Amino acid sequence: MGYKTTVNDLLETLLDFVYPRNIHCILCGEAIDKTDPYSLCTDCREEVKFITSRFCEKCGKPLESMYLPQKCPDCIQNVHYFTKGFSCVEYDDKIKKLVYDLKYYKKRYLAYHMAEMMTARFVELGWEKPDVIIPIPLHPRKERERGFNQSALIAKYVGKFMDVPVECTIIRRTRETETQNKLNKEERKENLKNAFQMIEKQKVTNKKVLILDDIYTTGSTIDACAKELGKAKPKEINFMTFATGRNL
Image 1 (cartoon, rainbow, N blue to C red):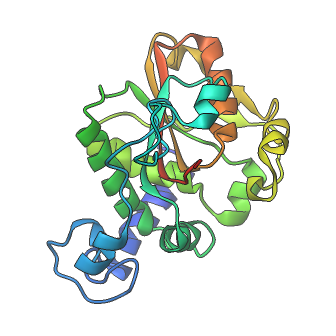
Image 2: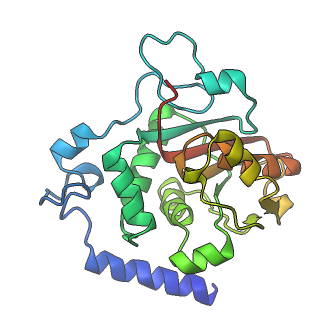
């Protein structure tokens, strides 16, 4: 176990004391019962739009009830490098605040509850358990500035809940790309071209891979990562993210 891993584990243990779980709702801050799922009060849990009804069979984006195809317009019109994927909740102002609180306000304890929701959704879908979970890497400089990789932190808990190894060194980010939320779809693709490099092919070959990230928007990041991982010829490349929006 490396020095960095040891420090991070100690920090997570400390956070459990500073922010004990299931004391306050992670969205509204109201006191809750220890038995309330995901550390959400009843009202907030009812407001969260869990993706449980109609969704794209390829990327998992929610579909309108009157929309007939089983794929969203994007997956009908474009080729993706992943096999299939899903997201846990719809992205709205409440979920945006949750994600931003984790990423930019260093509320690392939120990753545990996001992982709880994602794991529960995975079980509900009845997917076959992956051989390895790979979080989307940050560029080293950005990770140093932030202090952690939010996707790797979520993946750590998902891996524990699912009893699946999490590998953070299989693929690395070789270019420091511009922030994706400022770009349109085509700019996102160009921004991520050759941004990832695979390091340990043997850990992917003939394996069921699950890529993990916090948000799925256009799929450009997942695609760029999946394309690079595909060079090692895994059995399949699926993904899951915490949140996504609608195409319609």
